[in-house]
Length: 254
Image 1: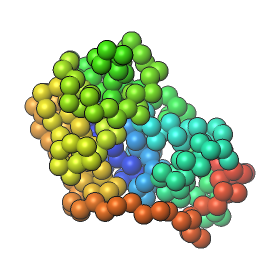
Image 2: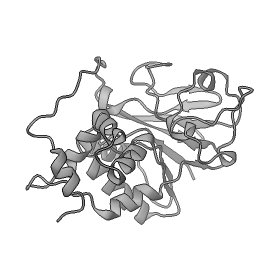
Image 3: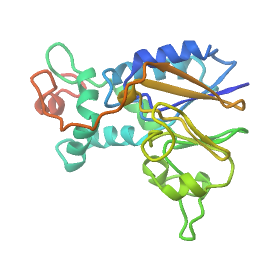
Image 4: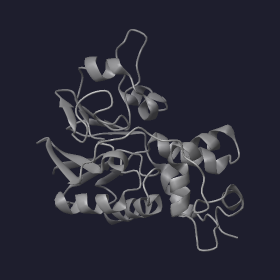
């Protein structure tokens, strides 16, 4: 059985569906791992979550969806709207997520099933081929890195961006996302690999390229058309974006 690991999707449903076809993904025959950050920044977070739920229901024993830092921000914001945390989420892709959940009346309706699904996602997974985490492994004071089973609640699993991890880790193969290849290592739009690490996030929302890696062969699959990343510009709320009132009072319908 091959393992197919998909990088950060960030609301790019069309690319995700295209990638599944290109990989010739076969439920029950292939093991599928989504590395986290299904939501935010792209145009269809709702559609990506729905697709992930469908895939998990279709093959519950051979599909693993990890929780990324953007899922954490989304859950925190839904639980505690109108806080500093929720304001931070809105500025880092949350508005795009909310737009995808906005109905014709302008109210945001996030199905309870989606919240339950995102809340249930694990922080890491391991098989014979590799350890899979969204961001990094927990680090120790001596500079070494812990297996995630020793610190399953560590923020490093979803938020870590440690240069020493990228350059010095030398344990079992780790496949991770979160840090876009080209930002701190490797080339824009290309999966970054060395013996002990594979960075599978190629910044689909930014570069137009969504990537996956097959294990144990390390074959890379990619879809989309590469575009040179440009510096991020400050976001301004427009009339087309969901209003905070709609978000606060219409989360689960009326």
